Image (cartoon, rainbow, N blue to C red):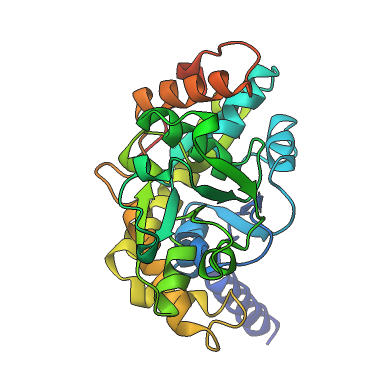
Length: 323
């Protein structure tokens, strides 16, 4: 009887051991500084998370919304987080200050800033801005002002040729009320709003006149050296989300509804914003950087006085960790 009982216990224990599941590998938690709030323009990130691309790479991604315009650079530089979304000018200015940050993945293949004017203004080319009032969100180192200065230099406009006026982020209202003749905007935003309201407009994208580096994924030199596989994994996951978004914007928008509040109430214009953004992400060899665009961006920043001295633009980015 005892032998039978012992055999039964042994069978149960062996069976239990055989059914035990292997331990789940621990995911690497990454807290990613984002923009102020969730937005449809972050669609590739939402798609990558929702489809499990980051999890498949062993990464647990947390979106951290807030005022990270400059803090994100500092957080990555100090190692508080290994990655952040940043623009090329931010990285160049940070490196000029000795911060060891590097851009590892290109996201926006075209600089999204543009100048827009209503067709009724008679403005048909950048040269027609001479003697006109041009609104800009600000006149310091933000992307919109950098874009304006680069465009003006490219087409030969001098400071005295136009009346530049700070209007904040109210370009649409300032244009339709005639307060300004043209405005510096994001090409995938305010023009969409104008079209939705029935206005015809002309658009001068900065990217049509000068190549500048826009948003991408920034990391630091220590992470590149000590955790290269993490950088490669992060790049692979994001780029899969980007590829899927470009291939099926409708499905991507539906995924955005889980992350962005109010899309159902404002669906038409937000879908239009996403569609208008796609051309700024498209291009061959997603994720790669153009060295010439980095050099041009550094030159523009130096001319604007945003860099005290020239920086080695080739050290501000890398294409070595892409799929």
